[in-house]
Image (cartoon, rainbow, N blue to C red; front, side, top):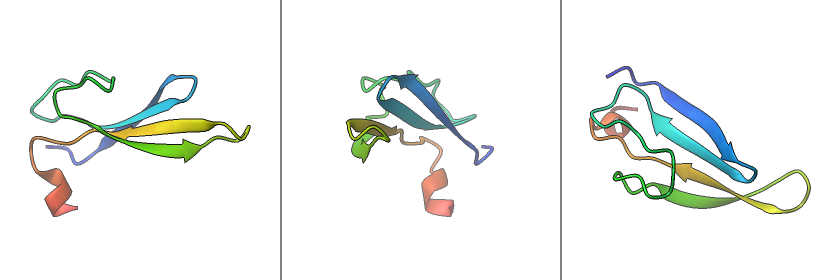
Length: 64
């Protein structure tokens, strides 16, 4: 467990935040087996975007 996270823009209006070196290889989509939590996020042009926060399987959120 590294405790590090990846933030990656995967589409024009989507950003995925996922744990690195976790017990699961991530699918940076909303269909990832970890059940990412979507949150609306306003974009600079006034449109709505989404931030998908992926959940770790190694429990790092409890230690952070």
